[in-house]
Length: 502
Picture: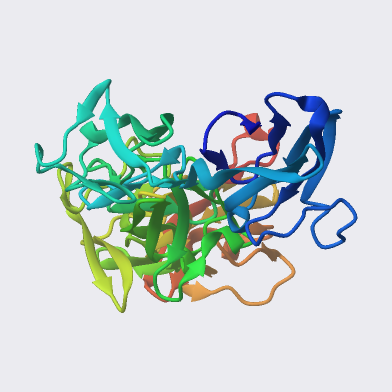
């Protein structure tokens, strides 16, 4: 009579961590079998009341003549020879042994299903496999097996596939295949390989960007890489991250730096940092703040006619503005240098103490040059204007005052008016027959320049004769004569008083 153990194999390989059941029973004369039991590798009886082993190893009667040995979760330490024994016919001890070998099923210890080598580097596609018995590992790409020693580009290592000098063509899905010949177990792991490339900047990205003070501006950083890079902007002189500035924002995904209310402090070098998993690259950009022109100074001037006048205008800005003039009322602005339509007029442009300066030179000066002149300063940021006045001074003149003789009758009063043109205004005095007019109730003078009226009441012949109006200012004087005569004709008796020289 013999005992049998199912499954029927003297050596059985069982995976660690799995439940295992072995059943022992008599082949014949089952009624004569008693005291059926299981012994562990140390020949100790396995009992369910053993506190040390009952949670992981137990026995269970399956049928009256069959006893099962149950491993709750097989451990590597439980490998060994287990014996089933019984008493036959009350006197004969019979037994049957089985050897349990523990095996590890294929498990992926370090084999990420997405891996990212960097372009141009040596990279190992990781595939660390564990099994007992030890597995054989091979690789497939695009359905084709990578044979060891047949390629310098791929080298099969114990825990991965080494790619020499990674290229973008190495993108794809690789299969890491593990085989245990002893058990026939086969397992495959699909690994997606995506080659990462460090950021590179677009050659068209400018190295200098001009922005205007007081306005909003944006600067775009353009780089490509895999994966798409993230962007930041740094000020070169102090490593300030511009995303933290209260006047600027940075879009990390698009690389756009936006500056609100540009100030002259923004002038200088800034750096775009483009980062991804493959690396970090930086590119410098020179930020040039265009400062709008500002006219600092233009002064009103007064110059005597026929002399040389110089009207000076100074302006600032970045870049320094060009400065010129426009006479209000004229058809066009003046050009630098000699004016093509008037060789008396020159615009001289130069830089003085860091400011742009233009001088309007007129020589000789004539009266029509008098007027308002606009100083115009322009650069890329815009223009500024400010007015200055050129006053042409000249000596008194009666050119526009007609000369008329006056007459009176019956001692009627006569009003003599004198108007002198000059800058500055002239002071007017009166003479009669080359004598200064004395205080006399028959003379009434109203105004002493630039207009003056003399009311004469000719009570006798002393008041008739030649009257002279004399106009004086700092530049000279002018004289104007007129005659007051008596009229005896009765035809004028009812004629009203007339103004003379008006």
